[in-house]
Image (tube, rainbow, N blue to C red; front, side, top):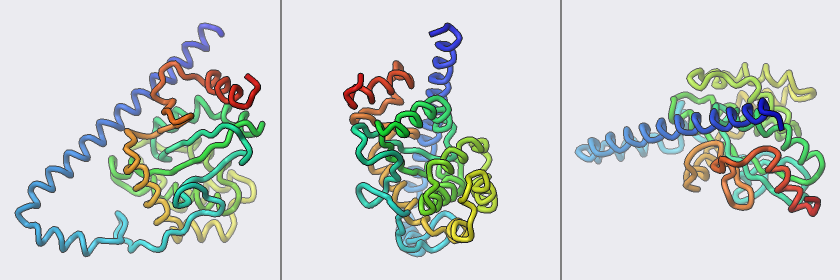
Length: 259
């Protein structure tokens, strides 16, 4: 490997680490704020309980939550995983991600070619779980709307392609551009066969909003420290500073009996 390539991979890892640290600090600040508000609210517990009850079943925009509708083909516990790749693949990569998350995009840029190669070859299956932590950290609803749109794309059989488009077109973390369903529908035009009346209605109506909320609850309940969380063999490979696309490929091929 050339010195230039080694430097490029090192830079990508460092960028991913920086973004995850920023995310961790933002989450810590958010939790601190919640704790502070809770302490103050003890004096008015009855009123707080009333507010919580009044807002139960509503999302951040005040919209009443609907039934949990999993996208077509969703798998795993509570149908929260969107699978990509052959079911018969001997290796599985579990990815927890947020479409507004810069660190998730950094992971995508670095690992996408290798993941595509392995899934296309039938050696790897990827289970995608969608989270909305940036909406909580930065405020907004872009993570939720983008995740809903991705679930709509799964209904149409175009999740993988649309997933990649969302990362290619990811706005700045502070720009809640994905909250605009019109923008999400516009991006569907980059995926052949996706921009249909059914897809548009699914995106505009928030068909999978409650499913996205449930997925995010599962992320928090899992005790993960941030996105992306990428599990292979039960270990978060994002936390392994020695991990590279080449090493991941080697691990998958070893499990496939080809390494």
